[in-house]
Image (tube, rainbow, N blue to C red; front, side, top):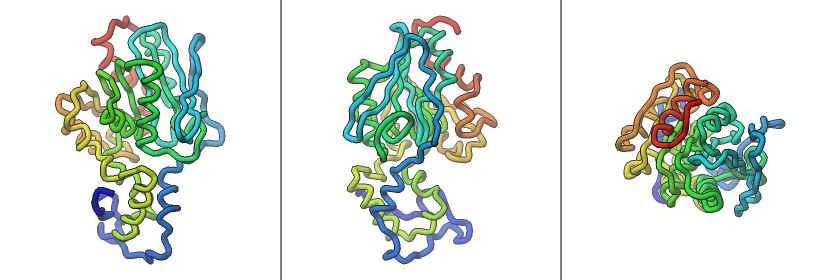
Length: 287
């Protein structure tokens, strides 16, 4: 673990303590179980399937955490990778699929470990980043990536590891992985010792929490980027996206009023804005 961490640094505070973490009984907290809870997503009992069009194919990407379900469609146009977020799936981008294909793009997507139709019980940022690199190794270079929520963190980590892509669209992005951990109300009562013991357990799982800080990670990126965020996002406040955009030199920030955290993916205006951002540098036609 890179450094000690104070819960008050996460941006999530218990109002009853005026932002000061309560001291709890350290002996009552099992750091290993808490760390596993952080990286264990909930699966819906019956998820919506990915809208794979006729002629599209489903294939597998093999990782240390098991077989991942992946999807590919299109007739050889510029390749767009769709990257879902925490407790989501590739189906979250179903509204994007027909528009992208009508514009002449090819699309590729993967359900990360323990998500969608993939195997696995846990998902970590480094494992999801490696999955994107493995996907690219089999498919070839991506012309652009469109990511949502924690998928933005997966993409950012993959870019630091050498993911080859020209354009990036981040939608409803988190800011730091620590924010994700501390948004659970019960964790806001942890003491600094509690938190640091859990971060140490996460580190043993290969998750170095302080590293996953998007404004710091994107500061040296050269890709063109569009950062989209709704003003009423209750999961990842819009200030997170604004902070990332300020750090990513040359990026464009687009405020999307009233679209929340997930509904933004189904809004046709948001879909077209994301695709219009990548379309001018492609050979695609009109939708």
